[in-house]
Length: 129
Image (cartoon, rainbow, N blue to C red; front, top):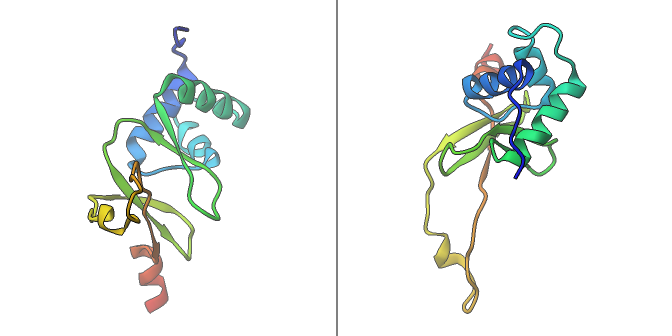
């Protein structure tokens, strides 16, 4: 087992993800984390994410048709909402459940992903004006 070295850069990335409350793209992480660590570069963000993925601190969020995003691990079971206008992704708390009833006879459900699509509040309001 390797012990993860704590750095200012990883600290800035972790704080950024913790404050975001939603999955972020590496570029979004870079922009926000630079407020804490001005010399942070995109390569360092990718290296930090890779190390934090390996340590289980960060989870990669894969949404069909979108680049990978990252969020802190251990946030509990939740799903996602992707805005069709701005393409941002938001966490949706809760789960409708009842998926076992959809599984074909003899199959075993092990996990599920749910992505809702529509317009976020900001984009919806822009469309009204």
